Length: 396
Image (tube, rainbow, N blue to C red; front, side, top):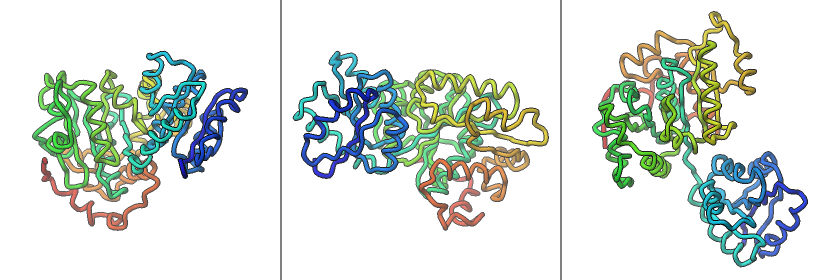
């Protein structure tokens, strides 16, 4: 255990001493801190290099903490400890995100083995993939426009590869937004009995000349029924091995496929407009996401087509309604946005200085703050951005 650092979580202050004792007996293991709330645990993870977190699962909110760790501390090993040795409970803990399970009272040798097994997880995920889902509060609010241009700006901002997945299986518009005609679709990847691997994924991905690769919706509506939740889940796991960022255009009709995508998303962006019906629907989607198990901290509101001179409700009204600041405001820029949609070009290719494009670029920077703006792409109309004007693309 030389050099391994662990943080301990137990909701009960009274039993914390008993919980900590076995960890302190293991030579070479450093107990960074012992905490009882998610806030203090998250602060500990931000300020320390922690290899693993051990959680006493005999608490009311312990499994929720495990799920938050999976989203916010990818690559950090998770060990669940409990007096409950029922098989169904152990399975529930593992599905929540525990990499190892240790029975209480803790046997030192068992704990040492569990620590050793979760230790490699951090090395494997030193550059974890992040999933961003985009969903609209109503039809026509610009969800696909935001998703497509966010993928482009994310690729420019990080100078890395980005996957863009169309989960609106019946009427998705991602391929149309880029004037692309993919040979294969998500139905060829996530159908019943299809063994998804990296070769299969490469065949289905449709590469754009912008470091963005799309997975399109099926050509025929009837084929959407071939896509299975298990297939979608497996697809996202394979995508995470290849792409640092995966952007997902979600439909508003929530089903198992949407639950699979949003359930493990790092961020879910609800795109809405400043209008009472739109905001009401956004609230319904917000509540549905939480019922599906999405961490409320991961859900963000994006105001699209914003024009303060003509709105009846204000930005402050929306923030008060959701008890949080609005994540991004995309101004109304009808001329350039409609032109980009008609020609199948990103907004940045049609109008590099567009206010709408600048707002979406700002979203990319907020979602990936660890990256600076690549110098080679900072100049409008040059470098990678210039290539976006080309309509041609290739499918692997």
